[in-house]
Length: 267
Length: 272
Image 1 (spheres, rainbow over the protein chains, first blue to last red):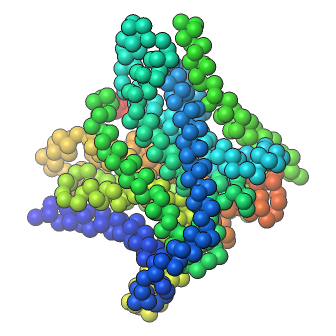
Image 2: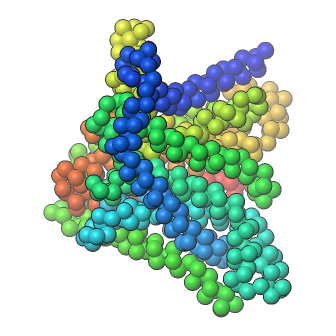
Image 3: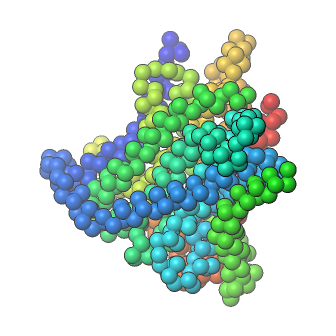
């Protein structure tokens, strides 16, 4: 009986926390499709605000998708070879490099962005192009790709696999592309989803790195929240949710599939 | 052997060059720019000597500390509960608690406005109940709510993963020896979760120190360091001061994370 009480008290608390996180999301989705949020849902549903957002801020959606895909390409090219090298050499130096690579996550985006501006702000063409934002995003997301791939590479028996392939005459290139890469598919996929999701939502750095011609989705959101009516801000947020939810669902699905594979190696 | 290691160096090189050119070099430049202002080295001590900067440092540290404490209590209670009790809908609750993980700070700020803003839910409910409309989104309290909002999804998975590894036999032993639920929690569960609390708490703390988007959406008048840096940079055009302050902010958050990682690591080693 006493245990039952404790169970329901904790369940109630957990439900309250869930409500705290989810209710505002639902409210904002509703606000984005109602005619007038002040007079509640009775005023009826409309897609007017969504269309208004699409008209005014379409470019930010495309720029964000473009940057996040370019960021993914960048982190794949830079991150996978680095993770492989770090997995092969487990010594003090490789741990120090790992520590350094994770720094952009620890240092606030504002500081990194300022550092980039005071160093490269003078290169006009570079400063005003979207590549400037891309550089910031790659810095911030690279650690997630490296850690994700490194986790898988340290969990599998890389040495035996590679030696096996080498003894059958496989060159380094063949081993890398046909043995190493297929074996860390899971880590690459998880890292990729993380990179795209983070790049899509990055604001702290992007707000300082952007120019009027290179506005990303979160920058546009900040604009809309500051200057437009609540319904448009909500509709814009709805557009952002539509883009990010599939990525989050995929991430959670991967996250659930993963522990069963990793638990044994943790011991 | 040497061919092998030169190959590994060569594989690390692209990431290394990118990192050096766009992170280490800019950080060094940031440090240098911080020295070029009127104050010279004083820019780096101004955060302690200037009353305004010092007060924003204290409020930023305080806000980050309270956010971390509240988040750990909330995530600890909900996380251990969800890990221990399997019931229909459990997975859906976990999904809801981790869903806002990828929301940018600006969106979190907007969520706070939806709850506690001028047209917010809390205001409506309080007006219905007491006749007074409670609006606190555009203040430190609103910022605190936003920080707890984005910290919960970041910590709950770590807590749940650690709770999964706790040995239930320890709790049973404590119970059979007559320990109350409270004592089991304080003497068995919390010490067992300590490494997870340290590492999750450090991430909470560092994120709350450096977060900018939420404060930016809620109000420019909230006195926290990232807002001060932003104001110095854009409105005052005091680039040297902005550089010095952000270098100090970056150093503080990095040190907090590094210390916590060492502490959590050594606790794990000591336990094992």
